[in-house]
Length: 528
Image 1 (tube, rainbow, N blue to C red):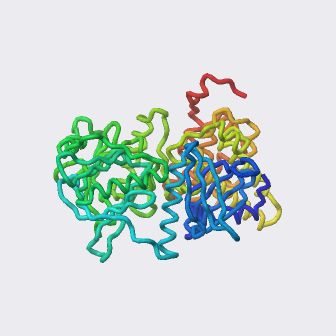
Image 2 (spheres, rainbow, N blue to C red):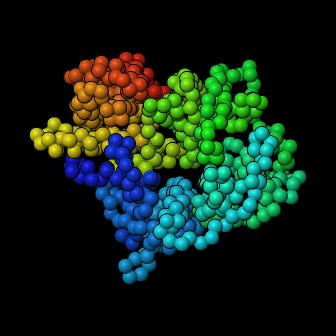
Image 3 (tube, one colour):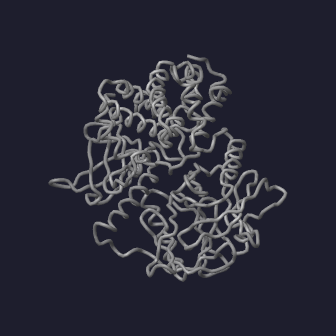
């Protein structure tokens, strides 16, 4: 694909901050595999969003083909004959221009676009007054809390006036794509129930019709229709709340929960049951939150503290906790997710937040191989990134110090993109031997370089180990990895590193190259 080290240094510096650090407003926060429709015909483009701009990228070489600021956005229109097509109307040099795209998850893309456009307008212009109403939230403990509900273009925004601030602060955001239903309470003239992420929250507002009506309009604007549950009473909502069954509880951990609402962390208990993680009030043991294990996307293990953070498949929210037995919590979650998931998926544990801007599919989406073949000309997204790793890999053994360093940074950047787009279960089992080998060569060299440094750079080491774990799950990855020179020496150094996550991922890689498991989808297949 023509990935030179210098071009990689430029193109990836704005999309990968896990190693470089810093905050770049032009970093991509979301990317989508779209089809551009124009008078020239139709062709594939990656539609990428940053905090300040949006652009289209050619998937053949990952070069930016067009770029616009959010100020150039005028409006958008949905195609009435195709649920996947929409048109952005933009300010051009002389007249308005149109960008017509097709995307399978159209509402999801438009929701993200409107969220970023709204946030950008807050800082660059005088935005119109928000559509909002005063309300009261009924908490899980039966207390009432005054709040403000804003009907934003992308979702329902929950605000509260905190003791430390004079204005209302945003505490939670519910994208319309993640709202299960909004239902008026039948035995209350002011109550309504908002269902989201499998939870139900009761709000009371004298502007109930205003709230529900404008939410319906905003959701319809992105092509969604909010469901309703017919008639719900307060008693039915209360009866639907989860209750702790002590007999089913596997293990409990006392934790502290951090949130914007409180200056100091609150005491909580995390209880693991067969299919969910329950957050309990330590006094009454009331279930405050029930988190289905299948909704967990990743766990962030913050270095140098007892803190850990839960990330979810849906939404952009996280939950931050602290526990003295933090690794006990993570071990329990890791085992529970691995044993209860239908597809035997594994919970990813990292030291930095997941980089959604590196992904080409939403977290909830499953790769469509036919679409990938049309888009990249490869059998899978994993194969596409393996080829990119191989392309830059030829520079890692170059003669110039500058070229070698640039190639190393580019290699690790592509490895991070690979990790973001390939599930931890690994690449396709029957990925071609030649593709696997060419990608392994530079990765093994880079791993040796990192392992030889004392101490090894934790983020770089973990990124490379995560990449190798995904490759080692395949037939040829498992068969060939340990045949490379110095691999075992590198693993011996990394397994005794000071960083616990480096040790964890080294152990996981050793497990995958010594205890090979054939995935179910490949069991009936024939090796290439």
